[in-house]
Length: 380
Image (cartoon, rainbow, N blue to C red; front, side, top):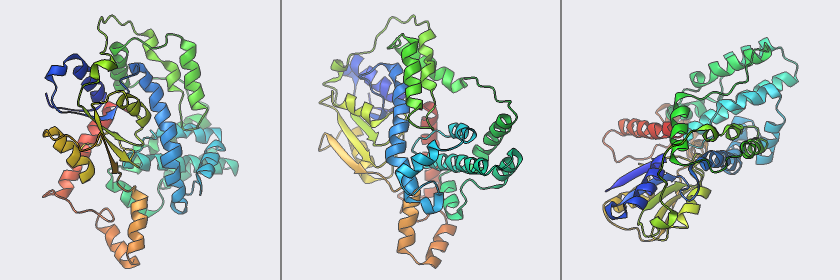
């Protein structure tokens, strides 16, 4: 069997390869769950991924472009600005995922800027009405060039989160906020799968409570969701158990992993990879995407395609460089062109567009983003 699994699909791929090693052909496991650990540890790893990726990848990016974003010139300044926000402003921070795909980073920055503005206005004794009017009328991303670049990624920042932030502020200022945790339908389905795949790794509610709030105390952007471990209350009647990691040692799988993946962090992927001597990996440095299919570079795509066609990679670890981040790409493009050329580029699409091998590059981009979006929705 040829197989390409992303996110939870990697868990299924590992499981199948452990049960039926005689049936597997080339199997690509992209954005890997840590199969050497219990399934319900994934919620803890997700939060660790948010913390690590923000501190090591997103905050440095934000500080590199402080002239446009205005949240701090260094990582320490960015973190200090977050920690010093007012409570109302911090409550807004939960409107972003803090994942590291290009579009997700755009939304993260939008939310951070909005929270920073609310905090500054509160410190200046602005009235709630003044604050809400300002948020209603202002742009999350004020610089037009940045806005065009982020909108190219497929995200409408004005409508995606503004209304929910405004309603949150109105409720807070009128003391109508109800603090209640709720699961979406996607959460309910995902938690059902997680809780049914394996028994909860630690049955002590205090462990999960302490873990969740310990993570939340490390950064204001981190919620304490882990403290509500739903698998504690799941009546699991399944008699099956997952294959042991030793059952996979001879499997010639290919793992694909980005350095700053949030939902399935590199640390967990490497823990699994280091126990599978016959498995190879394509490792993408300086990249935060969750799901790397049709990534767009020869180093990643050709290595994966050749493996699927039966050609083993030359090395157990293939290291590829990630694509430039949006604002870094803009800065490089601006440095290479005159002001007039830069303006022309910004009016015709994404700055510094790369040559495409597709007959209709724009249609190809939309279809690929649609596929990636489906995968991202499956593990949020």
